[in-house]
Image 1 (cartoon, rainbow, N blue to C red):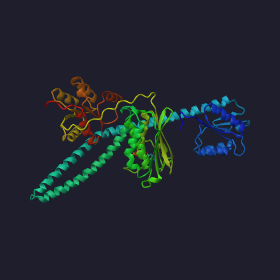
Image 2 (cartoon, rainbow, N blue to C red):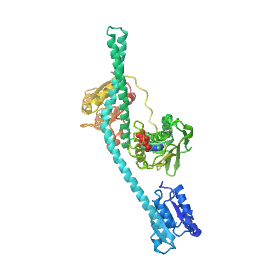
Image 3 (cartoon, protein in one colour):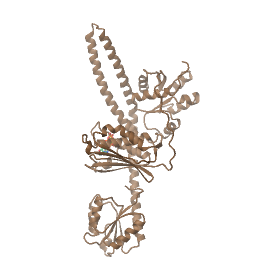
Length: 532
Ligand SMILES: Nc1ncnc2c1ncn2[C@@H]1O[C@H](COP(=O)(O)OP(=O)(O)OP(=O)(O)O)[C@@H](O)[C@H]1O
Ligand SMILES: [Mg+2]
C-alpha cells in the first residue's frame, strides 16, 4: 500500500561497486532499497516479497540479462505494471530500444537517475489518486441511487411493519377472547374451535409476513446507511471500545468458527468520528470474517483483530483464516449488492457500508487476500490534528415514565400516520394529523402534547419549519419534545439543522419497539404535568 511509508526500490545490478554506490545514495534520499546482483534472484524477490515502486535494471548481466528479465516481467500479470528504469553502458540500438519506462546510459549522473525515479513515482501516484477518485465517485453515485430507492420504499414499508405488529397484538386479543368463550361451554363450541384454528393459521401467516418485512427493512436500512454521510455526530472516540462492543455483538457467530486473537496496544489515541458508524464498520468486517470460515473447527481457525498507531493514523486490521477472496471478485467487493453468499445470508451491502464509513472519516480501507488461506481487511483512520479532552457523555435517558402521554403524530403519508398512532395507542393518547398546520392549530387552541412525532420531509410545512413555529410560539422546551422521523438520507441543511437542535431522530423503516422506546424516552425527560 502506498502512502506515507518509505518508497521501495529494487536495484538489479551485477557490478557490486555500482550496486553498492547506487543503493547507498538512494537510501540517503530516503528510499527503502533492496539490492540484488542477479536477475533470477530479483524475479524471485518480486514474486514472494513486497512490490517495489520502481525497478532499476542493469541490462548487461551474466546469466539472465536485463532483456530476458524484462520479457519475463512483462509476461507476468502480477509484475508487468512495475516501472523499470534500464541502465546500461551498451551504446548499441538494442540497449536504447529496451522496452522500459526509462533508459539511462552509463555513466549517468546520480541526479538524473534520481529525477527519473521521482518523476515515475509522482506519475504513478497521480494515476492512483485519479483511479481512487473515479472509484469513489462511481460508488457514490451508486449509493445515491440506492438511497433514492430506499427512500421510496421506507414509508410504505414502515406502515406495513407497524400494521403487522398491531395486527399481531389484535390477534392475540382475539385468541384470548376465544379462550374465554370456550371456557363458557357454549352450544356453538364447534364454531369456536373453527375460529381458533383459523386464528392459529393467521398467526403463522402473520409471523412469516413479519419475517419477510423485517428482511426488507434490513436491506432498506443498509441502503440508507450507505448514503448516510454526515448526520452522525463526530466526536472523540476510543476505537478499542468500539471494537470490543462489536466483538460482543458478533461473538456468537465467531466462537463456533475461530479462535479470537486480539492485539491492542495499552496506549491508543482517540480518533475523531462517529461511534455508531465505526461500530457498523467493525461489525461488517467481523461478520464477513466469521462467514468466511466454515463452522465446526474453531481451534484450527483464527480471527485476528489488531489496532495500532502508525504515524498520524490508527490502523485497524481484521484478519481471518477463511476461504479468501477470488481474484475476479476483488475489484467488485465494495460495490453495493455484490455478494457471493446465498440469498438470506448476504445482501452484498456490508462492504459498501464500510467504504462509506471510511470515506466519511477520511480514511482508507484495503484488502489482502489469498484464496484458500484467508483475508485481511485494513482500515486506516487519520488522527485528529490535536487531541482535546473527551467530550462529556450525555446522561443516559431514564427508564419509561409509565404514565399515559399526550402524543401528536404529524406525517403527510396518512397510512403511516395512522399506523404509528395504532402502535402508540395502547400506551398513550394519540392524535395523528397529516399537516404541520393542523398540529399548530391544535396547539394554539390549547392542546398540550408531551411528545410530538414529526416527519422531517413534508410538503407545505417541513419538520424544520414546524420546529421553528413551535419554538417561537411555545418556547424551546416544547420544541425539544419533537421526535423527528425521517425516510432516508438527509440533505446538507437537514443535517445542519438536526445537529444544531439535537432532537431525537428515528429512521424509517423503524422497528415498532424503537418508536415506542423513543416516545417513552422523550416523555421521561419531562416532569409530569402538575394538573391535567
Ligand atoms: N473476510 C472475507 N473473506 C472472504 N470473502 C469476503 C470477506 N469479506 C467479504 N468477502 C466477499 O465480499 C463479498 C461482499 O461482502 P459484503 O460484506 O459487502 O456483502 P455480504 O457479506 O455478501 O452481504 P452482507 O454484508 O450485506 O450481509 C462477500 O459476499 C464475499 O464474497
Ligand atoms: Mg458482509
